[in-house]
Image (cartoon, rainbow, N blue to C red; front, side):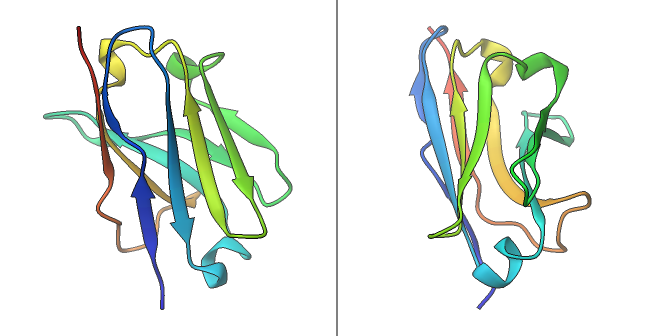
Length: 115
């Protein structure tokens, strides 16, 4: 069964931290690079970080130095450690493949950064 299940979001003050998790079907995890995407209110979904099967990773400029993407191969989980969060990080975060997401999405996890 193909699945993408995100968790770990919440309400956090500016400067705070959160760690997102995404459980991925092994059939996907073992064959594709993975990424975290964000959809802010009223905006299109954008990629914020991706990680290759080799472990190589890249980040969009706005999160460099603050976010870290990682993965656990044993349990097919992708993580996004977010630190020094800003209001503009607010949105629903999704994991999916990279480049080019699959034709379905998980439910996402809401991250709200507000004082």
